[in-house]
Image 1 (cartoon, rainbow, N blue to C red):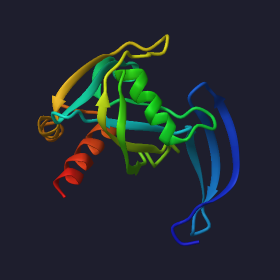
Image 2 (cartoon, rainbow, N blue to C red):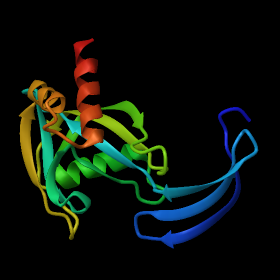
Image 3 (tube, rainbow, N blue to C red):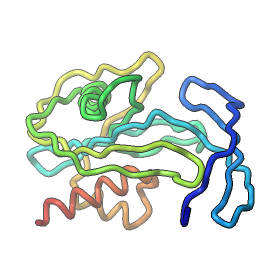
Image 4 (spheres, rainbow, N blue to C red):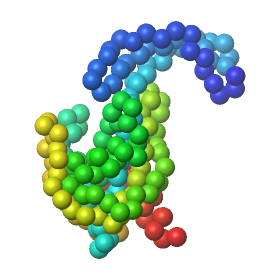
Amino acid sequence: MHLEEKTLSSEKIFDGKVVKLFVDNAELENGETVIREVIKHPGGVCVVPLDENGNVIFVRQFRYPHRKAILEIPAGKLEFGESHYDCGLRELKEETGCTCEKYDYLGLLFPTPAYDSEVIHIYLARGLSEGNKKLDEDEFLDTEKIPLEKAAEMVMNNEIEDAKTQIAILKTVMLLKK
């Protein structure tokens, strides 16, 4: 049982639209019992839309917990039964109006592994064809094109605060340098 914790009990204390909150009792490898608060999240996808000129299409939208608009790549929550592959294509179309010819999987990340089950899958979309956005009824955002190299500089200068965007941009830069 090294580096493992055994769940002894689990109680759902909040059942929301996006997240569910559980309070668990867990046994550590030394036999001690601890309380773990866990947010269960369906997961999501983020997409780096890279145009033929080397520009990334970003979205800027208000993020309520931080009380400000944040620059991010298109992303969204998985719907029940939806594959992350399809979710990324859907979010790309909804938020930017784009479809793509090439769509590469760049891996996944755990944004906050200490207390949240969320997994975010990362894609790179190329061969973009622009069209009309299909935003959700409660979604408001602006799009901005930024050269990939400038975006990487912005990550390193703390001008892009969103973790999934930072990781996806840096992974894209590294992939394209190969």
